[in-house]
Length: 119
Image 1 (cartoon, rainbow, N blue to C red):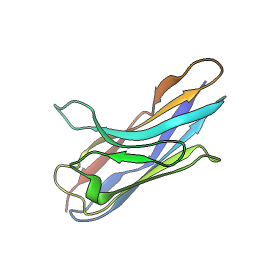
Image 2: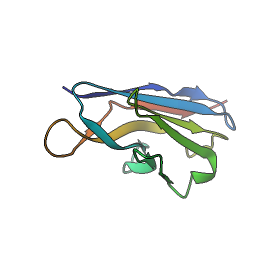
Image 3: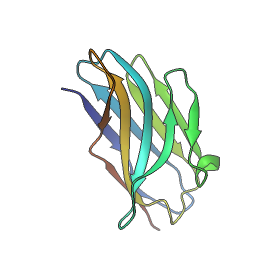
Image 4: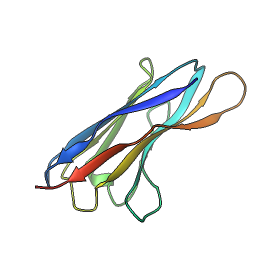
């Protein structure tokens, strides 16, 4: 059984920063891409950032100037640092990983963590 467990999030003030973490556990042979998506009420889930095993990153254009995405392959974790929180940032943030357990590559999701921006 593979699990992705997010932590962090919660309430952040406008202009403040937040850090989200995600840890993968279970029988995993290799983790390829890891990333973050978010879904605001009434909207589709959208990509925020992804990072490859080698550390190459992609970011959504709307947030790329405020994000740092990093991962620790040995610990099977990925972290997202977001600066200068804006009114459009509140959403449920989901961790995603493409990984292999034996044969083939599968995608997994975390349960999500709520981010609220408010003073």
